[in-house]
Image (tube, helix red, strand yellow):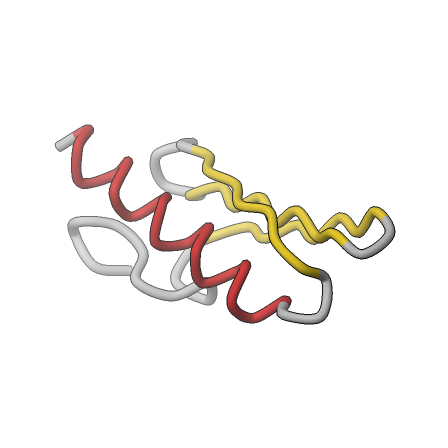
Length: 65
């Protein structure tokens, strides 16, 4: 894990996928800071939804300093 926080899910991030019909919600938690972010999108694009959730988490970590 880099000093600024994770850059990929395998860098200290817990990832949870929850599907509801055609929708997918991905929640990610940084194991170092405890910060959490989530994103929702079409279930047929799980990689894109996960990347969005991780990007949101990185923004939160950056803002928290």
